[in-house]
Length: 178
Image (cartoon, rainbow, N blue to C red):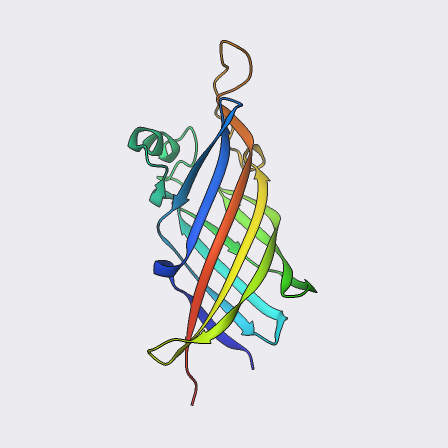
């Protein structure tokens, strides 16, 4: 039976990584986000996903870098305070794997992305709520969303890579239905 599952931000993560100076990966996360998954654990293909991420909640363990990422050089959080994703299709691949496709709006630009997702399972918590978990990954080109800032390195190459890897670990809950 289809139900509404509220994403639990305390037990979920939205993380990313991007190349720094062509040789290393810098990782970060967004600490504030919300969303709803609607569907039946027996048939996720008929379900839907809606997520909103607070762009200002970016955290890379370096406040100076985080401030720069919030600026108009990157996310411009004053003008574009959040990112939004809404699924359009969910396709069952096999063994609990799914392709979730839909538009992502980031920095005022909307592009379709595909999340490669895995349903990790369902359980009843000690408080009587049913819980589900998904992991998902995708990659995107930041320039496709107008995030063009960069700096040339003296030795060649650029400061920030174009490819951004995004990883999600989502736990969501639904009150037990009588």
